[in-house]
Length: 292
Image (cartoon, rainbow, N blue to C red; front, side):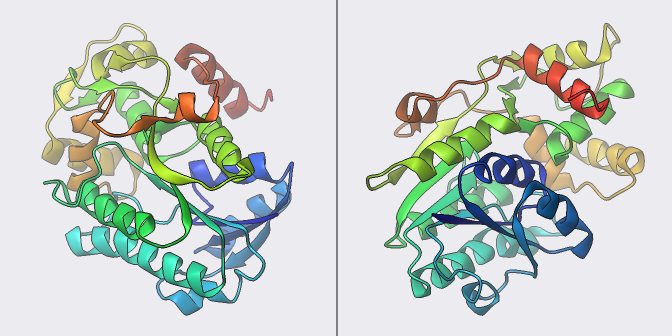
């Protein structure tokens, strides 16, 4: 079976492509030409294009069984762009998938996604989920906690903040960091399902801790300075050397709900095993050092 991964250049996209190419043909889309080579080296067939209208995707969906939709994200210039990047791209993807007779779609979403949410990103993801659930396709929505590994906005910002003695928020927000490879394993398990799939599942890491606890793991005993979202966005924009929106900082300060009413556990549903935070951080450090 053939799988298409949209927006595959990020942390989750690379992990998912790496997992899926071991078993089947994988196609991927990226927006930037320089992002394509790494995915091709993994074995994917990569198309460079923005996915803003159904026609942008339709011509490369021929004979695709599963569409994994990753386009979106919180770090956008304004609320309208948050909606367009997350909800708008999902509308285009679902329309193209129906026209191309794709069988199954997997949407990576976030805990707390809700069309009525106050935060624009959570609201946009809630609207995107509605599009997928009512698409007429087999579907799986994975509400994933903050993922970590080499790269990724949340993990990069968290590590850089810790290096400079900073925590976004009051430090008491609960986190359940999720190793990116575990998200990839969940997507592969969904793709492998021989029977129909339809539902929304929650997926988080096995270790729940506060943001201050994570800071202490990363900063090795330093004292944390806690920043509100506006100050955090300004400080991290300077440290990261690219713009971090206030909306992103607000999301980081919220933490991750441990469970949500009416949302099933992906670990139980798909028989998943998850890497502990200690082991995941160690493997990430090894990968950064080129050990494995």
